[in-house]
Length: 136
Image 1 (cartoon, one colour):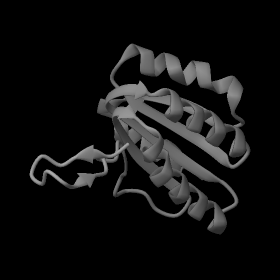
Image 2: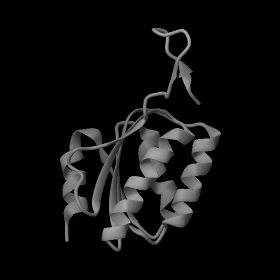
Image 3: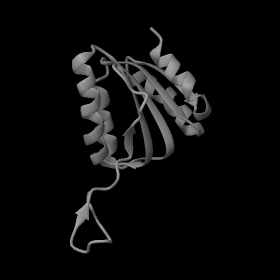
């Protein structure tokens, strides 16, 4: 879904990516900031990053930092389900970081759908989330 750029009446630009890599990511430990409402295009940027890490490492560890997160549109939700199904055995740990009760609840709901260990951390404890992911 491209949007019209108001500065140029005849040009369209892609919407900003709602999933951005966090600078602390390295090796098999990847962190992403998720904000706004996720769309299909966001998964087209996110998935190749994870799959590239999987080429070098047998399993990866993910941090998902929900920051002003508003959920998924239907296409992005379907992308998320497909990604989770495809990589359910490739992800070793998932740290969910946020500041809303429903985000903590989501960590509990996700547990039966993955082989990964999942922990929820309050946004004020993001360093603890990284430390948990980086444990050997």
